Image (cartoon, rainbow, N blue to C red; front, side, top):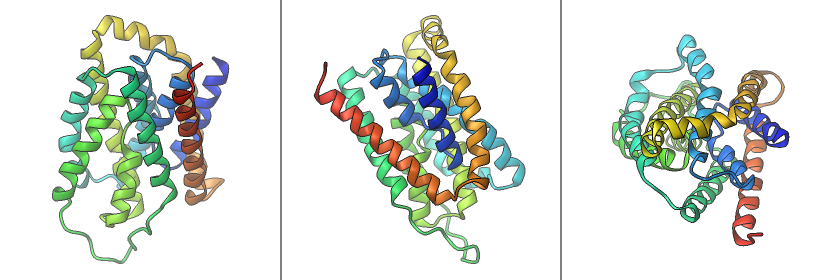
Length: 252
C-alpha cells in the first residue's frame, strides 16, 4: 500500500503540472494492484477532483477560465458522464477499454500540436465541435473513471480553438464536472452505503494525490517546461498501459 500511495503521489505531481487529473493512470495502477474493479472508477474520479479543483479555482481567479467557452464541451458531457457511470460493465471489458484509453492518452500527450498564437483571430463558436466531442469523452469518463481532459486538450490545440492557458483551464473544468457527474452515476449504480464503504478504504490515496497535486501545480511554472512535463507524463502513461496489457494477456 505505501508503494501504491507513492505511485499515486508521483502521478498527481506529473498530471497536475500539465493541468490534468490523472484518472486514467490511477485506474491502471489500481488494476495492476488487483483492486476490485467495481470501485476503481470512483477512486480515480475522486482523485481527479482533488487534483484539479484547486487549479480550476486559480484559473477562474486569473480569468483564464471562460464558462461561456467551456459550456459547449460540458453541456453534453455532464449527462453522458452520469449515464456512463450508471452502466454495468464486466471486468474484462473494463480493462480493455481502460487499456485502449491509456494508449490513446499517451499518444495524445506525446504528439503536441502547435498552440494558437496570441495574435491570431478568435475562432468561431465551438458548439458544433463541443457537443459531440464533449459528449463522447464524458460517456467514457463516467464509465471507466477518467476525467477526459487528457483527450480534450489535444483536440482543442489541434483545432486551435483557444490559447494554451484557456485550453488548460477548460480541460481542468471539464475534468472536474465530468468527475462529479461520473461519481454520481457510480454511486447510484452501486448504492450509496456500499459505495461509500468501499471508497473510504482508499483515503490514503486521496491524501497522496492532494499533496502531489499541490506540488505539481507549482512545478509546472518553476522547475520544468510544459513540454518536458507532458513528455514525461506520456512516457508514464504508455509504460503503465504496457504493464496493464502484459498483465491482462499473462494472468498469474
